Image (cartoon, rainbow, N blue to C red):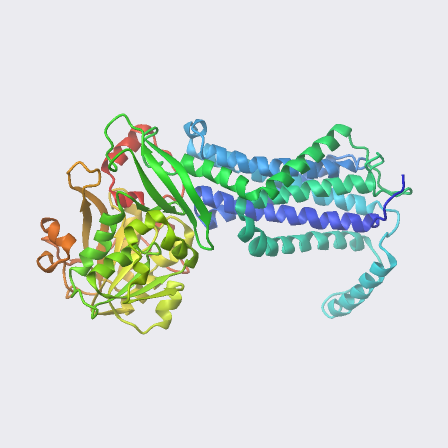
Length: 609
């Protein structure tokens, strides 16, 4: 059989070193992000994952000394095992965070189990460099082509001259020549992996398919290795006179081909695979605030913008008792990342609380200036339009805002409010906007997601609230929804200390009210706060209030400004010194069933956002 033109053995090994390093370092990033999605806490998950991965690399490197140096097919097996374990590890982590059976285990054991794939990938990756170094070192002579050798020699002379200024150098060849070249390819693979993953792979196909694509590269590296060095018929790139000869089993080659086809199919059908696995995870995790078997979720739409994951779904009451959450058996909901943004039962009462209550304190004319932060679903703007005030609307996610304009569910509640004649909408980061603008506002409305991820720490920081304070008029206030101190006391203490250090001294608190279940009974809903730098600001005034406040005037009658409580020993959340106590549910905790039922009975709707 005529052999194909092939690269030299040394060039082949350098190329394989680059590919496997690319995969290993990218696995580290991908699994760090995966565990962050599952458990929250970016710094915690990246720190733990990187530490576990590098220690596992060391374990793998130590174990590699036990391998038979005369069996180079160990490289092939390592890449095959990695190509199998990486996607299986992804599925395993999703399963233990979704299926019912693992939730019976202690939380700490679940956390340890979730990191087993990182250990496995780290140990196998630790095999790679010692095995490849041994193969390159055993080559009888340098096997680079003359052209490549001239380039490397010229590069070496330049580097030798520069480095010679600071270190003792030599032009003679040594064992460093072999090792340094292989290590250079390994580190270069790490650099390229970081760049491609951050700027191309993750933004284009997402987290799940990134891992499948990396596994495909691993299995392709395994195939290339046996095609280049095998003594069997599939060694189509092998040369007659070789320093490296492999004798892998036929069954492993067949498995490799099947695995290549499977991973290739997953990458080609990436949208289907991504949607299927994401829906499986989300349907098993959203609405977990309620006792098991009471609420079921069915995903209808999901996609990821540059800034957040958007999930629209139907939730259905499955409990044996009457539905205490919403009217009927099923309602539509939309989540941004893990937080509920809007449901049929909460859309109007939430925005009544956020917009209508603070607007009762000011004239309902265009002389009242309002800054709406977030609110990309346009519903808050519809309420502002009804009060005929002037609005500056700032939201960073243009893709979601465009989606919300035409989404049939959201249009029922925003009534094309984006056409309001007295609004200016800016697609911008709120930090940049506040630092650039000189505008002063009577009311600043924060329609932002809950503090559930590290990415939201900046908008729950002292620096952010200080910018808000500086943008208020002499009678201006900031309005936002909040979590109950009874359910999340640590969050509330850190939050109040953060707001207080920003210069806010007084607050009013109130709830939204509505007939959420359609049974004619008024219920308390979301909790809201008004913050002010002093107590001279207007108070909620039912007598001159909006239609909503007038309807529930008895609920808002006794409102006054109160000093913001502060707590000793609790740090505020600073931009460059975050206090993670301000985050909600940084880890997914499954409390015993009686505790969950009790918490469900006592929580407010704010605690579910």
